[in-house]
Image (tube, rainbow, N blue to C red; front, top):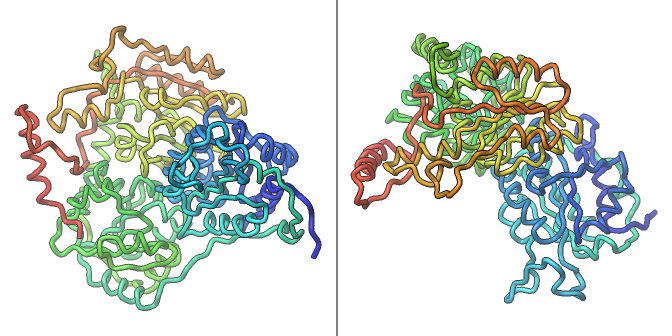
Length: 610
């Protein structure tokens, strides 16, 4: 057996560079890195030696660069991913939030945080987190509950088993998610005689499990017996590439389709079967169909509470749940009838078996009524209006100001709710929302990752001032890397979404908006000046007309543009939507809270989680 002597860090980089997807492209496109003690001497030297064969990008925040890596993988339908490495201690812990985001959203990313010395000679080393009752614990153990596969590399030969397991996890459609390989810093520098065969190029193909014949037969029978079926399309439709199969089943059988946040863009917005978004942020059309549905066909979705209206949305007493999912864990939720299979394969089999069968027609007025509501919410304000624009009016301006192929990026706060309802996209992956973990601060870093994945498409980030303040540093990275990115920053002076929820639950506006939070000096942040200081072309506009003009200019600019506009924190689109379970205090001295509790208890009677 031929061997090659390498440090463990060199071996890791060489192995990662040799792993390919089924299109023959490197599965890992390279590494994001912020070097510090714990990864600079070992991995830093190895990445430098790899050069362009495994490129390294420098971030400004460990969490931000991890978000960029995750967004990259999501944009490319999990067919490619990135490594992210940090130092031991705070650098590593800064990535745990991003690991949770990837875990919740079933997205691949390889985390390689530096770790303690395996030989323990210098213990406690700088930044080491000590467990007084367990000598094997380090800060990186925080990654365990938010990793789909976790390992600690404390000997060079550990890579021979750990790395194949890591890639199997990241490329398996059912187990897909973040992998953490905590890399002891002395081990990174240790040499070992690795088999040359370990570094031979390997192609990792996405499995497409076929449905079990018995489960398939039961699913066909359930659909054929239904009177009001509804398909709920989740992110699994996009990751499976099942868009055409979904359209074929829906068109052939006349089954309406509603889309989750992750599944939005599974069908073009104007497809005859597409009723739009579902749930708490759903369209009136989709939610009306959901209330009547006697069979909910969930495809590739986790069935989170925003999708189900906290399980109060599906009100037909005869309702049954058929869950089509490649993951048995997700398929089996809420005592569903299961069809564990690849989404594209399952939908194709169902379309074949149900050929000639037709569901009863839905009310033909549902979508025209909803489209009219969208048009009204997103219309240009009247010229005489003397008020700040709403989020919906800004969304309308952005929609009019970008191309058909634009990818819209957002996360957390009030914007995702409005975008889920109002944004219209005609191309798959044209809607990029991080709402599984609803992580504030994802937006700009995520937009960078999207731009890296799809430099051929226009990328527009919508972000509120609250999220911008949490994480904006990768704006400088986007400028440094020369990416084209347009950021529309809506300044409503605080956390407007949670302020509205607070008041809806009977609370007073408290500690959410800047002007009602405790302060001595009123906040006055010049966001345009801040963005310009990081190298972006930045401007503040006065109104919707100014925003549309600025968007037109940004489209002709091959650089990072930031457009700031003041908005009203209070209005939201009243059309559509559904109840969401947010517990209201049972006891309060305030009548507003008592009234909110009474309404809450009344709404809870509609919950049917099984």
